[in-house]
Image 1 (tube, rainbow, N blue to C red):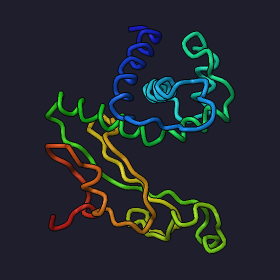
Image 2 (image 1 turned 180 degrees about the horizontal axis):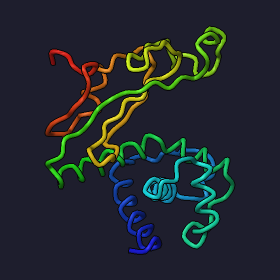
Image 3 (image 1 turned 90 degrees about the vertical axis):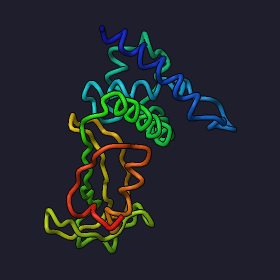
Image 4 (image 1 turned 45 degrees about the horizontal axis):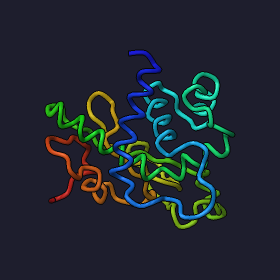
Length: 199
């Protein structure tokens, strides 16, 4: 399958899933964006498959190579804002795709873990103003260090495909997130002792 065929296939699949996830209009005021929501999500999924990681790299890649598919791609700031506004839709869509893929494989176990995301040096945490109300002080046992920031929780399969993920404050216990990440999944999940509880 060529890249062009792959983009068209993903776009058709995204369009169907989008209509099942977004049942009420996201925007009620203002002008609609030049790119449709389905087009932006298509670009995100295709970029992820091609190993393009950041919004700027993604925008640059499609701007330079695929304007025949996305002629209204516009400026980078507008594109990045559009991606951020669709975060919850993209997350639900990736979860739905992962569950479908998991059901078709129905054999390999899933892997769950968390890792720290520091937002500043520990000594500067008290003066840090960004992300107020979202970040917290935490401790990473694997790195044996205290830090200030977020904790990312990730569920993948053995092939490295992301099944589900979420972001919490650094002080949130891994056990609180396990059921959120594994909702609607069946089979085995492997994690370290930080994920274990009586339940």
